Length: 87
Image (cartoon, rainbow, N blue to C red):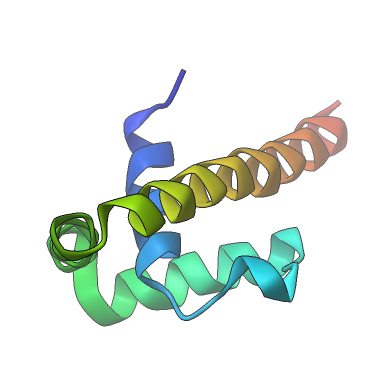
């Protein structure tokens, strides 16, 4: 199940320059999300996603699936570490 945060982060990752072929680390994913949200904002990222789905639906769907998978992994790892420190 995706939260609103997951969706916004996935849209930002989708709109970023980071590519699946680069096999980014969780830290690189989080950095890309932060910098892309600062650059375009939430609505700007959503607009870029919509544009790609309009022009290239097949590749956009694959990129969004990758983005969601990377967001779940990158932020779950972060939450796990923070929970461990709070112990």
